[in-house]
Amino acid sequence: MTEDVGEGPSPVVGRCPTCGKPARHATRPFCSSRCRDVDLSRWLKGHYAVPVVETEADDPDDR
Ligand SMILES: [Zn+2]
Picture 1: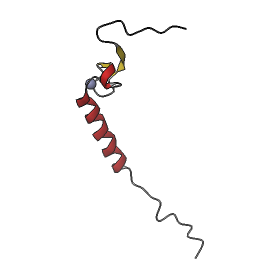
Picture 2: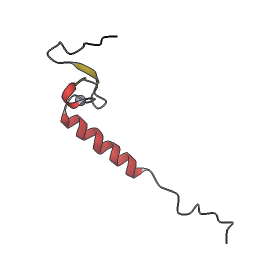
Picture 3: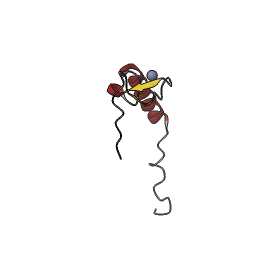
Picture 4: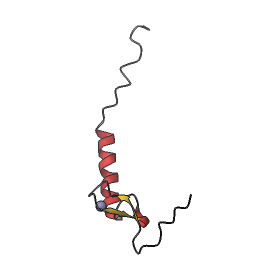
């Protein structure tokens, strides 16, 4: 198996999950560092938005 896909001037390595443009090898899987930043902040926000319900689920039957 030979996968030589690095002959083009701008090797496409998938699509940017932020804007859908072809991603670049230097900033994959995003098309630019800016899109990467956007996706990262979005991910962090989504992560923080998720309510962590674990403190109240501490076996109420164990009192
Ligand atoms: Zn992008």
